[in-house]
Amino acid sequence: MSSTATGDATADIVVTRYNVHGMPIDQYATALRERLPDREVAVAETPAAERELVASATVLTGQSVSPDLLDAADSLRLFAGTYAGYDHLPLDAFAERDIALTTASGVHGPNVAENVVGSWLAFARGFFTARRQQRENVWQSFHTSDFAGSRVCVVGLGAIGEAIVDRLQGFDVETVGVRYSPEKGGPTDEVYGFDEIHEAVVDAEYVGLACPLTDATRHLFDTEVFQTMHPDAVLTNVARGPVVDTDALVDALRRNHVGGAALDVTDPEPLPPEHPLWDFENVLITPHNAGHTPSYYERLADIVAENVQRAERTGTWDGLTNQIEL
Image (tube, rainbow, N blue to C red; front, side):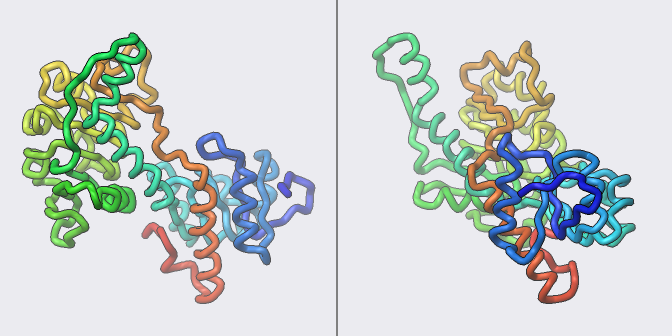
């Protein structure tokens, strides 16, 4: 049962009213109640209810929160973000108020990884050519390639990157990983640092971007990197749009410096209707949709509930799953 401002509404855990991927936020609240039956979970359906409920809440969970709302949250100990990213949040305000911050990292792993591998298989087996010919009622053989035996580069070896590599098992491919600290190794056959991006992609036929957007990764894939890449390489981006220099990508596609691209994120985003990327036959564009899964709230509730229970056991809101150091 959701809560609105009533003058005396209270809750241990408050869920903000913003949904994820268009799925009703009550589903998330229900999943939390199932895992934490001894806690009062309420959905703040209006701004007034949000402000009233947060006054006594221990946990607030949602996409974002303003510093002004935090000023009204005297008992808040944890903000549980419903996204993997957190650069849009008031980190200084959390630190000043000693409020722990966790993210939804890992929730996207299985579905985003399937999106990436699926795009590679679609390119390898010529599904886009088949669909075009089907629309035109054309029965004509066309050339395809084998995904097996290829060299695959995964840029970013966090939860999503590791999930991609996991799903490559059984495909008989050679894997290359790129991460900030290559000395840590990883699940791939080879591991490079971001400063070795040219060495990592030079012979890769499939490249997947699953890294965070930072100063080091902004426009990581620029004209020079596209010139280094194999001319038949397929680039799949499920990271952030600005990891790729869009103008450089358009130029690389026009000059056949790359074989194709599957873009779930773009820069700018949304991609304007008149943008040239829409018109390439060898480009697949999805509207930042790889993160969608009907299991999103269930997976997220698992993380939040486990953290609440851990804090109850230990007496501290530290050492939590997906906790960000502030």
